[in-house]
Length: 144
Image (cartoon, rainbow, N blue to C red; front, side, top):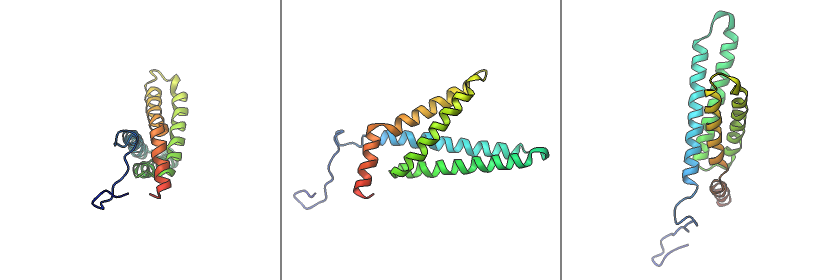
């Protein structure tokens, strides 16, 4: 679409000309990015705590945390670029996080369970908001 001078004009969205999904996507990306950083930190702590009698377990657990953290980081970056494929793995990770929160509920105090629950719910709300869904499907139709 072009204006009177021939300049390209983009259509404004129904949210008053602002990107309604922007804040939701930003929150989701930040939460998932923080989860990736936490997994990298856990990997380092696991590798540093390796003892001779559990060396294999420490290495495999550390590598697992690094791989999952890297996957989440890649998905967070892709989501920020509005790649709709990234939402599926992130939602799956949040559902797994909710399961972990449920398992940690019996700890005393249950602070780990509460933190996991809140973080996963924030990410899920941001990812499944109608504005986010609209933005990701609109970008897919447009070919971005």
